[in-house]
Image: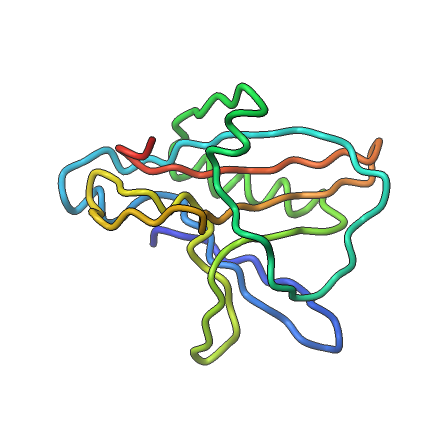
Length: 152
């Protein structure tokens, strides 16, 4: 398996499943580095955003990278699994950018950089995905940015 699922209560008795990559299956199959690079941006919030599903403004990692010195660190698959479980367990709210899909459930995927990578030639700008955890402690939050091998 190359991802974990995070089930989110989106209000009105509805749930949405977030599909979070823990490794790049495509890079591994093509003989490239399969680990994901994780970048963190920590901040504080005054109020939690409202729960629900909303259309978001385009997200581009380059915009965040010009405002902060973001260090991307390779993580092993098991490290990613533990990281997601720990952060989701502490969070009072999760904000996600990605693409919505519907199969036998409603979900969101593409929660990572959409730029061209070692194994994927398509270069999509301005539609990056990300994950933001809000914690009650000291009103802290963490924006998680995910990149694959070869992504700028």
